[in-house]
Image 1 (cartoon, rainbow, N blue to C red):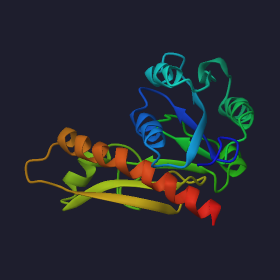
Image 2 (image 1 turned 180 degrees about the horizontal axis):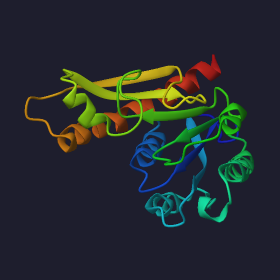
Image 3 (image 1 turned 90 degrees about the vertical axis):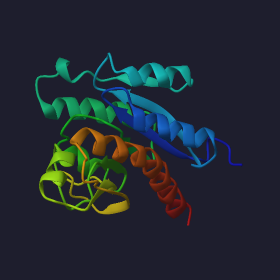
Image 4 (image 1 turned 135 degrees about the vertical axis):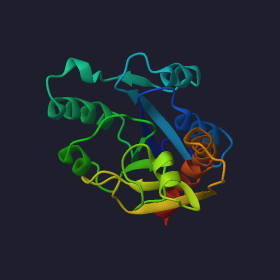
Length: 197
C-alpha cells in the first residue's frame, strides 16, 4: 500500500451534488482506485457535494464564477487554486462551466470529463432525448480527455446501455448514470495504471 504522498493526486471539480465525485471517493475508500483526492473545488458555494467532501475530511474550496467579470479571469483564479494541490489529474464531475482553451491547454492530458453519450455521438446537452429521437439502439457514457473543442477529446473508456422501446429521457438517464458511477472510477484507475507503467 503506497503512502498518500506517492499516490496519484486528484482534484475534483463539481457544481452540484457531485454523485460522480461520491462514486470516485467511495471507490478509493474501497481500494478500487490507487489514488487520493487532494481537494474538491466548486464554482458554486451552495454545491451539496462540498458537504459530502468535508464529511470525508477532504479539503474543499470555492471559486465562485459570479465574482469574476469574465471567463478568463475566473479560469485563471480556478487554475491557481487547483495548482495549489499539485494534481496529477483534474476530474470534472458535473462541473457546469465551459472552460477556456488556455485553461484546457494548461492541463493538457490531465483534464478528464465524463459525458452522457457514446462519443463522438451526441456532443453537448440533452443527449438522452436526442439518442431516443435518433432511433439509436444503445446509448451510454464516455470518459474522455478534455480538449478545447466541446466533448471532443480522446475517449479513455465507455459504458453502454440498451435503449428500451418504452424509454423516456428520464429513465434512460437514470440507467446511464448508474453506469457512470462504475465507469468513472474504472477509467481513473486505468489512468493511474498507465501513469505508473
